[in-house]
Image (cartoon, rainbow, N blue to C red):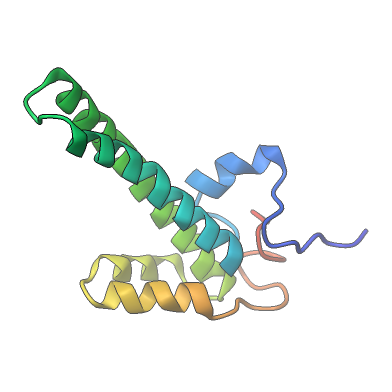
Length: 131
């Protein structure tokens, strides 16, 4: 049976793995698309918060919603970065570099631009897989 290496095809049961787990590998395209989704989702409550007075009930509600979504997607960003590093054959602990000013921009560009290992590595058989 051929291995499906389509970079953006994930069966429905793998979305939990994609967003919240640290095992496996992730391709450049899936990493970048996940990051773009994250930016859009986090930006919406922030935009809504900025439209209303901060002291109002709506302002407080949007503020809390933004905080919850931000923390959730911080986890998602770390999980996808670890899987992307795994695809490149690097240990996931290097994701800590995403919290160092200036270095984080360079690391993010490396994760987006450099290809992963073409064949199996110690973190999995192929990209976009928990195996």
